[in-house]
Image (cartoon, rainbow, N blue to C red; front, top):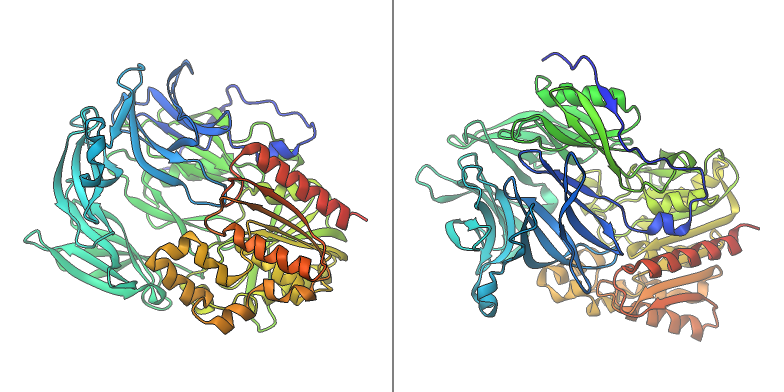
Length: 640
């Protein structure tokens, strides 16, 4: 396929951002837009963004930009997932508003509304069955909009724990079950004929065992594979080629992680693309097609983000290649096009831009600006994020990112900013509000993907369970010493900070290395492994198994030795502790036992506690107050 010959950039209504000072509020208020979706006919644009302190979804006429419909939820609820279910109707999920460190809190309630402002009401659970909610299927996920019937969609919901495929009327809320998955609590994958072909989930009796079922020729479920999570996975991606093949990601064979095709009749597996290096797949690239969006490539981030196509004859390869030429040093993401394969939303981003959204016209090759995530931030004033790597003391290669103040490179005050998790989570090159905030205010910011982090496959994660406070902490120490040795950081002006597990590592850092860090910041932190008994993680059987396996919770001696709260007498650094009383992930008891021990040892600390706040502060004013206090604390300790 020949490449597009030209691309005309029509930057309509592009915001003019001055070089005025960027405030704390600018960095930490919510995005103006975080997701845009075109209606199937391309006439309307649904936008999710922050309005008056909470996320809402509104529908715009694509041409006139007139607001046609809004979904705004009262009290402490906000808009979550949203779907176009026809050319004229949008469905929006209602979420509980939570802190920025928490996962979205879905409530199970969904509302529909037409673009003309009519028929806006709760569609799930059905309004006329509100009192019978215990007997209704749970969950609601649209998997196909069924273009042949504008009132009906296919959804996946759960009945007695098993995933079911349902036809669902988006006006009347009537539903009819078509099929049921094989694994309780799992998921199902459909083909182009809207039938279920794949069922996958966790074994009910063994939370570490994954079960994968495929439909056989008689239409019954047949087990295809089972595997333990730490030994690799086969992750179903897509049924394709006239529903004759299943595309999967598989890393069960050492050194052969990649994309594979499974013949649904013979069950034979063939490689489509074997990954080079250890960088994980972050996302998949789909063909520029409304009806047949086949996966044709992968997105990974070994250092900088990179796209790899295993089908270079695809139309999207030509489009993306041209767009990337138009936006050098930026990442281009192309959404599913409209039904006529003419229009699509294109998101452009990098380490200084959280996202700029454009409308791409495949017929005219024009690209017109729609909106930015943070139009009030001047990207030219922000620092660049540089991939870094070094050898840990045991020879393991550790990677991370260094964000520098614009125009400065050496002998800087530095913040070692530790990500949470810790397992499976990792820092990436993309725009990071916190890192840019500190860098803008004069600090080098070092973020380390210590062992156990995600982004480098299972062999970088699972073998390092129960290494917090030891090898994982040593990686942070070695990173700090590396930055000092390179002349980046002034050895007398270094602070370690983080949220959740990052706060654990910050406190453990000043316990283990009392002379290395001048200060530490703990935000929504875990400081005593025993206190996890009050956490929402502990409420689930799978959560308790994880705490035992990864955190050594069931080993009292281990839990004591790896909890910084028990060694506060070693601390010399100044401390700032921030917590919310409503935090269920790292409950306020973590803060309370730590501050009690600090006071017993006559160790001073600064603090900020907010009532009813959860895992990270959801209230915008509270969040701005917290980061204002963090900056003041850093300035008082490091800018000497």
